[in-house]
Length: 168
Image (tube, rainbow, N blue to C red; front, side, top):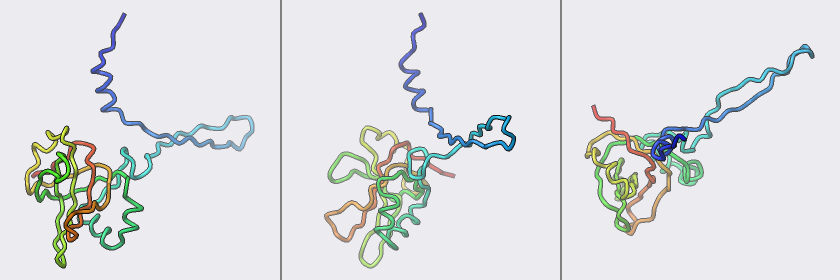
């Protein structure tokens, strides 16, 4: 008998992305011919892992400052793909997860940051990330996470895949 190597099946899961199909029936004018089945490829809904919202870090912070509740209702808990420039990376105060800051704006005595939170078990994801790198991070948008320092507004994204580095 043929044995399936479990490693292959796990790899298959990594590279297989489901495609969603919508099926519509076109009723023919002549009653003799059956309806024609037409398959239209449909994109998964926006904000899902398969089809995240795409936005710049600056754009996300801009939207947040214009209208916090609208930004939260649109993006919070949804998947986003955010491009920015690495300002710094370090550890979070309350966990071993790695914080990659991809946007910082100082205004009126406040500091506005966008951070990608990378689980410590994926710390190799940060190997090639350097300050000044152009980077795209994808993951679930958590929104503003309350900080001890009330003058720091920290928007956070739980990074769910290897960040893309767009160095020249």
